Amino acid sequence: MPKMKTNSSAKKRFRISGSGKVRFYSAGKRHGMRKRSQSMIRKSRGPQTMKDCDAGLILKIMPYANK
View 1 (cartoon, rainbow, N blue to C red):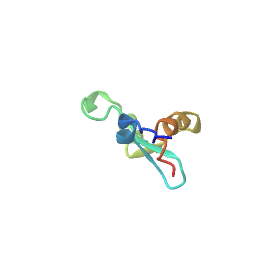
View 2 (cartoon, rainbow, N blue to C red):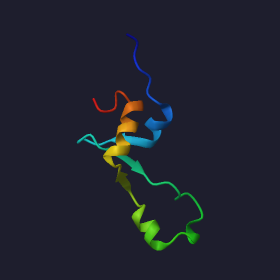
View 3 (cartoon, helix red, strand yellow):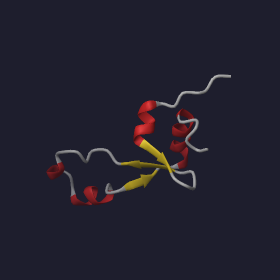
C-alpha cells in the first residue's frame, strides 16, 4: 500500500504537541492592529490549543503527525 500524503497547507499551519494536541497560531495579526481591541491582541498572542472536536479533522489530513 502506498504512503499517504500529508496536506501541505496543514503542515505549515499546525504542530502537534508532545501530548498529542494540535497547536496553532491565531489569524488576523499581520496588519491593521489599530482597529483591533487590546483584549483581542492579548488573547491571540502565542500558540493556542485546538479543541478535540476540530483537532480530529486536522489529524486526519496529517496522517504521520501523531506518530
